[in-house]
Amino acid sequence: METVKISSLEEFSVEKYLKVNPFKTDKIIFNVYNFKPWQALHMHKHPDNDEVFYVVDGEGIFIVHDEERSISENSAIYVPANTLHSILAGENDLVIISVQGPTPVGSMLMDNFRYGCPVCSLDTPVTINTYDGCLTVCPRCNIKLKLKKIDGRFEAEETKESPPTIAWV
Ligand SMILES: [Zn+2]
Image (cartoon, rainbow, N blue to C red; front, side):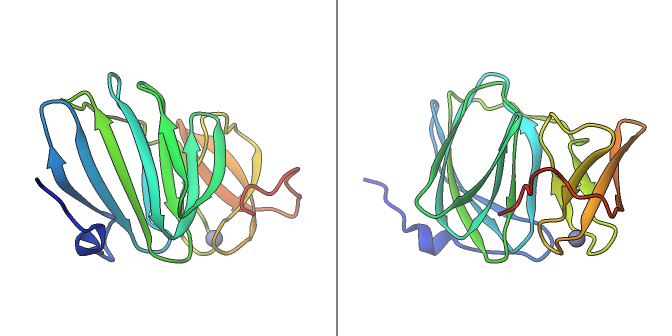
């Protein structure tokens, strides 16, 4: 019997989140994602593979297609095949398990669903419903921002306008 302690797989890097892959069979993959505060896994999808995430420790924002939700430890999230998803860690280390299947798992990155905060430089993922002129709040520095779509990518600038809803609670 193969067993592993998740706590023994918690390695972090200030460069980028770290993914550890303790189990892989011809049917499923079991991954552990370790995020330092405010690190992101950017918008991507797996055309033929379902994925289930489980939050071991920490908190953050989870985006699935057009929905954005705060997540914290003890939450599980189901992402159907061919559905865009992204993760942004909060102010503490975030440890998330993911199980994907069937293998092999293919990934398509959709790297334009994100913006950089002009004040704190945080790189934040956004939902697929984000549009030119959209108002938001930087999750880290709480500055009000207007997102402009330029050449298919979002650029953020400070604004005095108030967003109708605060995305990060
Ligand atoms: Zn900011």
